[in-house]
Length: 209
Image 1: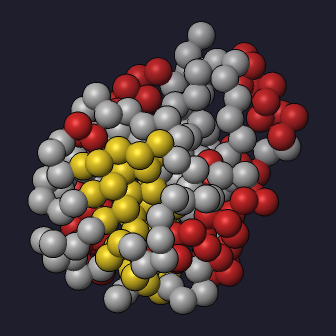
Image 2: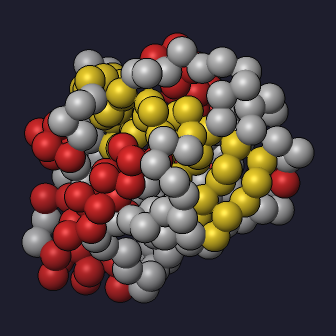
């Protein structure tokens, strides 16, 4: 039985969520002073809902372990590369800007430094967004304070129910980051906050060029 099916469907199809993503994309344009000719690397592109959906101008290299190039990644300005974000196959400063949206929390904690180092290495500037660990609702399982429950209990709930984006029985270890985590991993960045109802919903590490 799915307790959160309607919520999951809303999050996937809602115009509200699309507006949030579009607002974040425009924040990326502003904070990184994006120019039409800038070459962008999208680290953990998924199906392109956060960047490629809104950008049909800049040359974009979309990197993902399992990219979905059936939709927005099939655009003419996008080149898809299957690759590991902790060992990117590119030269130092090969890109003007690196973009990463809700990816680092899916990387094992012991690989966070490698992920951050690669982002900082391959691009002059970067924009790395991640959900805030201390936001009341865990965004993947969509259960209040789920991230603070003991792992044994989290796994037990996942075995019994479909929670948020996570199907019943399909466990994924997700490690949300705090602002202190981001500052440690990206010491040359400014930390920006996205807020919802007065709470910090997500954190963004930005290095301008």
